[in-house]
Length: 163
Image (cartoon, rainbow, N blue to C red; front, side, top):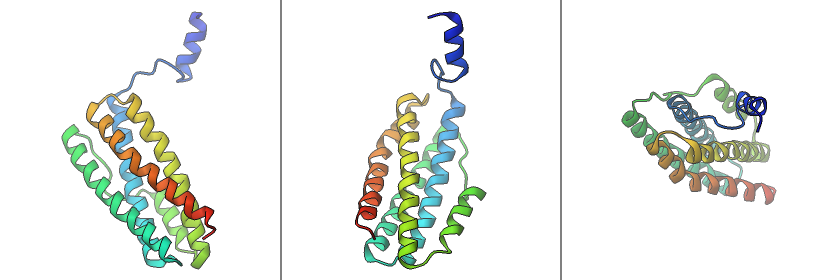
């Protein structure tokens, strides 16, 4: 490869990007934000879902993402990283938007949101598991991934059922 080509790839972030502590810390922050937001919206579904399937899925999200946030808190303490303790403004807007929906409209919006969010999480967790610099954070990402994939599968199944 020519030096120019390699330079273009590196400059575009395509290859050779060394994992860093900063990227691990950004991953932890993103995961914590996601846990808090998904647990919050899951609680809304648990309380306001039009069907028992939606309420049960919401309850599962609350339990799993609350437990995951607790694991993240312990991991961040071990690694010396700080994670957010509250939902950021953008995530709060997403949660607030959900409050405007009722009945089946809420259920569909909730499932579409969870499907999209869990797809993003799967991508981020796979990246961290494969390319993170901290072995403890990589192990956490690897361990959490099957649960996130199950949530995505469940949300997609419920959407297919045309709830």
